Amino acid sequence: MKVNEPKVGIIILNYVTYQLTISLVNSISSFDYKKFFVIIVDNKSPNESYIELSNYLSTNKFHFDVHLIESDKNGGYSYGNNIGAKRANELGADYTVIMNNDIEFTNNNLLKDLISPLENDDSYAIACPKIININQNIVEDPMLFNKRNIYYHTFDFLIYHLKRICPFLNREPKLNNNHIFMGSGSCFMVNSKFFKEIGYFDEKIFMYGEEYILGEKVYQANKKVLYIPSVKVIHKHRLTTKNFFKEIDVIRMGRKSKYYYFKKYRKINFVTLAIWNFRLWLEYDVYKFFLFKVFGKQNFLQ
Image 1 (cartoon, one colour):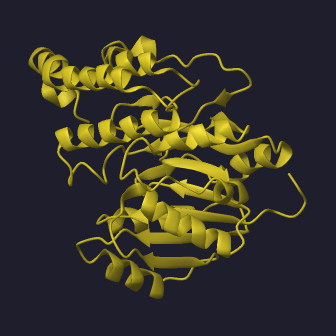
Image 2 (cartoon, helix red, strand yellow; image 1 turned 90 degrees about the vertical axis):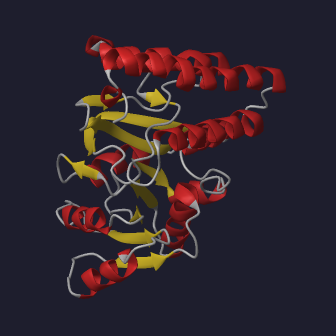
């Protein structure tokens, strides 16, 4: 790493669950890093989140700057995080970290460990830690280790549920120098200048599927995403969404997002997209119904 520490902007998107955001900011206080600041974007929460966060920040002091922004609307994950990322760029952040507010850290070296490889090799645009799902006590695979065709995505649900039933299938694949297509959007670091150059997140996506598009943008820019399994983050999966969206709504949002990704970024033809869309209907209305009956619904709606 360079002698002078790069400046890091940490973006935390809040929606309703301000208690989680406050807990995360307290955890960040223990980071073994000096040059960073935090931007909290309240995504137009319908409760008193903005007021509670404002009161919390005005009555507590930190060794880093914390900026609170209220979004003009709830435009989803991409819209809210873009507000924070653009502000981080204005404040001179060399790197931007996107963090869900429902994560925990296993040590205080997260920023150092993610920055180091990005500083040493400018072919990397993004660094991703290993995400451990606390609800299932398993490792969340990166969204994609490699760029896959649409046929892989057509049948990936079989692999996903087999991993839940057979834990031994959760072994991580061998990687070529730990290069991946894209990691989890719950926590990652991106070069701020690059993030701006590619237009940040695509705001046509409300929630779910953002990682696929970001990975595609990195791929098309001839840059790389680095997966660092030695850096671990715990994800209390869906604590911020399960109280606001039904399972069917989550599936529909994911379906809409992936359809948009395949159509705009992968230029998939209509016939192939129709087959893929039929697969999603089959998964929820037939396949999952069977699994709910056999294994119990609670095992699949975490």
